[in-house]
Image 1: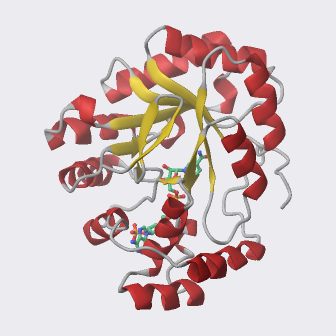
Image 2: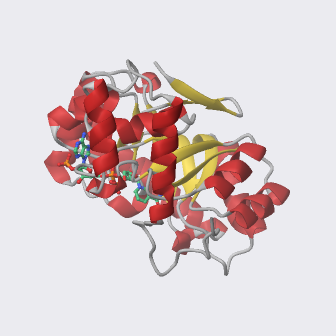
Image 3: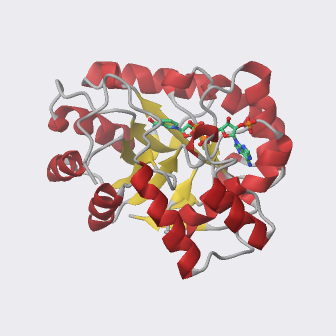
Length: 274
Ligand SMILES: NC(=O)c1ccc[n+]([C@@H]2O[C@H](COP(=O)([O-])OP(=O)(O)OC[C@H]3O[C@@H](n4cnc5c(N)ncnc54)[C@H](OP(=O)(O)O)[C@@H]3O)[C@@H](O)[C@H]2O)c1
């Protein structure tokens, strides 16, 4: 099992992203993923599929302890009472007493970090989350959160793929010893067909999606691609038997200049500029 370690957390390097997977599609995707070797599931209160993640886990027959499960609390639930209510509902949905990793999904600028991060840390102290972390935090937000946290923030989950430059937030996450978890690791479907990735893929007998995932993995980043297609599930896990050369990594890095951010909702922070 390939893992990225941070502050005592051992996060499987490839996880299954489950945003948009609903009902039985989600249950079956989780079950199939676990059957073929995935040991990391990514869900969120916002995705409306925690119940299906839990069902898929139980249907797989894989022991709970073997699977790393992440869920998230939304930006409108970051005051202590709301936070606890949201988390308790998530655990009820999942059918679990605790998750492996609990994240603040998006910061809420109206709630001081001492309050939101305080609520996050309480969840860990209460035994409802083994580890805690954040998502969509910028360099400034990371530094501020670290000033007040009483528990290590083990990861920053951010958008990462070859078409975006995240050097600054990557460096700040690493400065704090955090793992970086890449969401949209195949740029939400924009990777397949992209010329440079297709060309590199051909030389390794791999798909462009596998090249994108390998690029991230080789940077020491965790990736959580989403698919319910069995062939894609298999492909996305099969990125550990080849290596990209320094020249290939450099060619992929050049694509960062595309500056394509897939996820940028109204509640997004002012992102770090490259
Ligand atoms: N923290 C946050 O704010 C945040 C934001 C966005 C996402 N996320 C998490 O990150 C996960 C991944 O991001 P995402 O779902 O937005 O985008 P993504 O994983 O980059 O892209 C998903 C798309 O790629 C396609 N795909 C997957 N594997 C493929 C393969 N091997 N070959 C060709 N196409 C492939 C899928 O189509 P098929 O279904 O046809 O395979 C789907 O259309 C989410 O599911 C969620 O868990 C977190």
